[in-house]
Structure formats: structure tokens, C-alpha cells
Image 1 (cartoon, rainbow, N blue to C red):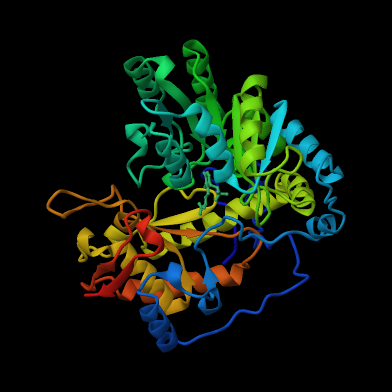
Image 2 (image 1 turned 90 degrees about the vertical axis):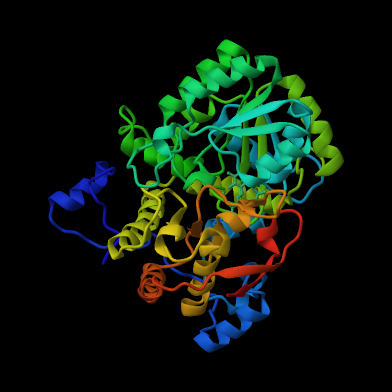
Length: 478
Ligand code: F0G
């Protein structure tokens, strides 16, 4: 097996590999300089610790996890150059060299005049939406990420997600399934009145919708609609480099542009850019807010100073800023991006070939499994996604997260579950951390999972907090 490229959505340089008939494994474009040992445990041990954790893998010790696919956020490995940069970080309170380095890289990437450094993405969200939000305001997105929605709703505003009806089918193969529904966007702006729209938020790639990409065409249409109606456009672009890969290989007119040029072109369409640097910044902690408008930037800067830190470090240390500045360059390396997107697709395509129902096509940072279809005998009120998450841990020490009725379910007045739209499980791939043999191991564990397909044992919640219940809920097996 190899991370080879299927011709489907992926012409360009890879085709050479196909036409030369030398289908070679796409080996990781890095070698390992430092290792972190992993503990190998038995199935009996994992069953016991999972039981102690109330069948919620969030409550496991990471030491007891073999392959951690809980998130791609802040879990990547930094390069030798980034670690080198850490050593020359300038920790001055004001006007640090490392700040100048970060600011220049981010200004060049975004073309925006104002750069505010934050400790992570949600801090940038809290600052910006704290100002743009408020009671009766409406925000419209291709799909708000959870923290985006939470920061918007916290101000009293409403957050609406609009995906085109054609994209909602989990099986349909579309190149840009992460796009926003532009007709519905215009309709909603008219319905609510443009003065009530806090912002349009384009999440790139669309994390809560399968990590699916957004096309340049779609972003340009959104820009035109926002201009016509004087509505503010935010690009939540923590996976902007991954999105650029899809544009280069799937959208007409971009084959000859570099990934960085594509990202720059897209970011210039926004009024603001929010980035959790824990993804395509290739670092373990950090965030950014960039803005074009001077007045808005002054307001945001005031909040930054109150809650994060002075303008030239915000929520970051000098060494963090140095690592982000280097990471934001490395992430556009064509060999890295090709390996990154193909290695995620490798997992998804092989799962699909085994008969595991996956959200299709495979997105950039994660593979999403449809647990309702995998375990047809488990009703949604017995949480098939949580059952799969537990089975993956017990069978293989793999940790991942349910994105279904545990995360998004609500209750009606008779305390009956109102299920989520889908019962998905996300396998998110940390950047530059696991090798192909780790991924092949995950694929092997799915052979055991497929043997459990006919099981009827669901699970039941024994404890749940009032908010964000997936983090701390406890379960028992039925
Ligand atoms: N926006 C998007 C699209 C995200 O995916 C995330 C985080 C954030 C904002 C918030 O950034 O964590 O730095 O505060 N996503 C992580 C995930 C947590 O697992 O998908 P943060």
C-alpha cells in the first residue's frame, strides 16, 4: 500500500507517477530527529481504564492512548527550523524582534494592515465577535465551528449555517463541498436587513462539515454579495493552506499558481482573518486576528490589551511568535502539503474500500465516519458514534471524537433526545506526527470494528453537564 494519488480530483505533478507506471509510496517528506515513545497496552487494560473514564475518551490519560486522533489542533510536530527559531525568540515586552518577524510574514500573507496576536483562535473570536456581535445580530456561515458559534451566541447574536442542499448528501462527490449557499445568503441578508448582519463567516476548510474545501469562486461570490449589501466578511482560515491545495488541484485556472499565491488571493477577499495557528501555523499554541479597517482595529486592540497582552505579543511569548512565523512559511511547501492531503485521503479511501461508511470526498485534516450506517442496529438515542469511539479505543488504543448526538443532541420538554443531523466520528490527523505504518495500523483495527457491525449494544449517559457535554459526560454500556 502507498499514499498514491488517484487521478479523480488530483491531476498535476502526481499524474507523472501514474503515467510512468511507477506507483510509488509517497513517503513522509521528513525524517525523525527526536522520538516520543508510545506505550503499548492490552485490550483488557484499555477496557478497564475506559470504564474508569466513564466510557468518555476525553477523560483518558494520554499515556494510555496509542494513536491520538482526537484533534489536529496543537498536536503537530514542529520542524528543526521552528525549534531553532524558539531559541532566538525575543522576549521583550514591547517591539520584540520576533513580533516584527511574525507581523511581516502575516502582513505579506493576508495583505491586511493590522495584525493582533492572540493565545489561540477562540481569543481572536472573543475579541472580534465581542465587537461585531450583540443582541439581535445575525451571523451567517458555511458552518460556524463550535467555538465560533459559542463566542457569537455569547454576545446574544444568532449564528446560522447555510450549506447548499446538494452538498448535504454524505455520499455525493463534489469538489468544493465546503462552499456556502450564496442564494440563501442573499435571501437571509434581505430577510434580516443588512444592518443586522454582524458578519458573514467563511470557515476554510469547513471543519464542522467534513473538512471540506471552499472554492475561490464561492469566496469571490460572497465578496460581491457582501460589497453589494455592505456586510463584513470574516475568513476563519486556520486551514487555509490545506484549502489552497484543493483549489490548485480542483479549480480551473489555479494549476500554475503556488499554494501561497492561492492563499494570498483568497485572504485578500476578506475584511478580517481569524486563525488558530495550532493548525496550519504548525505550532502547538497561538492565534491571530488581522483586519483591514483602522477604526475596528483600534477597538479590537483595546480588548487585546485588556485580555491578552500588549499589542506586540498579545497572548504569545517571543519564541511562540518565531515558531508561527516559520510555520506559516513551511506549511506552503508543496511536498509537505501533498503528503498532508494525500495521507488523510489514504486513510479515508482505504476505509471506504473496506466498506466503512465515510463522509465523501475526504477532506483535508480528518476522516469522518458515519456511525449510524456502520452500526445500523444501534438507535440514535443509544449513541452509535460514542460506541464506535469506545470500540476504537478498546480494540486499538485509538482515540477520536464523536460528532453526533452526544456533541449536538438536545432534549425536548419530555426529556426525549432531539438527535443531531448526523452520527459522525472524526479521526483527525495531527500534522507530521504519525507515519504511514501508524495509519496502516488504524486500518487494521477497523477489521475488528467491522466484525462488530451487527452488535446491538448501545450506551446510555449516566452524567452530563449543562454545556458542551461531550467533554465531561459519562456513559455506561447497555
Ligand atoms: N475555528 C476553527 C475552524 C477551528 O477548527 C478551531 C479549533 C477554532 C476556530 C478555534 O481555535 O482551538 O485555537 O481556540 N478547532 C479544534 C478542533 C479545537 O479540534 O477542530 P482554538
